[in-house]
Length: 229
Length: 167
Image 1 (cartoon, chains in turn green, purple):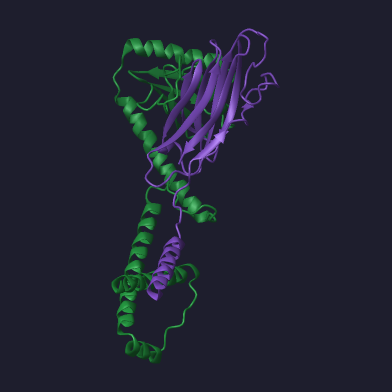
Image 2 (cartoon, chains in turn yellow, red; image 1 turned 90 degrees about the vertical axis):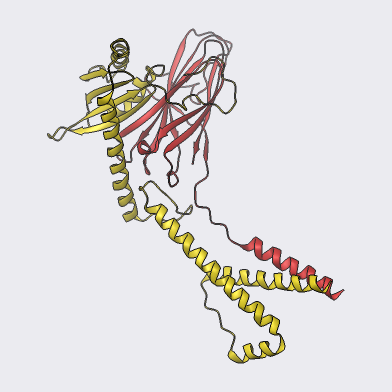
């Protein structure tokens, strides 16, 4: 019975320590330190209290170390790759951070598209698939008003097609590409776009069109009779 | 009696202190959007009665019909370390000749088209996972979905219920 009472008091002191630490962290308000006379009186009247107080102080230091470690990890995550966002909802956006993030994103995007281009260059040619699929791509272009008059070249290999066309710079061509892709949903559902500077102030768009990926068509268990990729 | 009171009070203090420990969310939650705001994409499309992505819900057979819709898909920047952006699309195609085709695509903050992925769904309820590489869904990119719905016959109805952006 007495032991349980002591345990409860210890728990209460630890909880009070945590509460004190939390309030220090959230408000950062200066707190008064017990005077030396008060501490001496406490040591005389309640030696156990002094021991518990030391333990709480040790816990406090450990918590501060863990907090510091967590903050360090968050900073590292924020700096990795640029596509991270560890801000709490509603926090303001730093314009310099936006600029940095955009530059990092652009670098990653260019690198990714270079990989896609290299992968296409290394692909073998399946003449039957390439001929059949090129025809489908040309038909999809012809069916889309706003694209049919745009000069373009189509090159298909084994499972990927490369389409190069002039970018009008006004966004009209970009706006029509998703419509054109609807006509290829059964053979080439995925696409990515690379922009190639032509050196005369204009750029060309290069589309890489590819077949279904591994996760395409996954469901959450709802029936989808007749559907599917 | 006194020791019991001490224990009760201590327990209450423990509980309240532990409950008070602040929890700071580090990542955005999924964004679930009902697509009642889809708009006809092309000016040549019929102007009314399809505005919410619902097609012929009447006892009138107008023959084979089609309609192109554009839907904005809200999202948040991807969490740290994410390699893909994922989206669930839900809908219903009621009627044996009803079909839906959609392309979900990403545009950079400057309007550049970055990439996209498509799916098609025949008659019935569908629930599709669409995945794009995170390199094509940059931090400040916007995502949209362009859909074409096909229907014919009475009470044929193609409904795009909504999209969940997985964060």
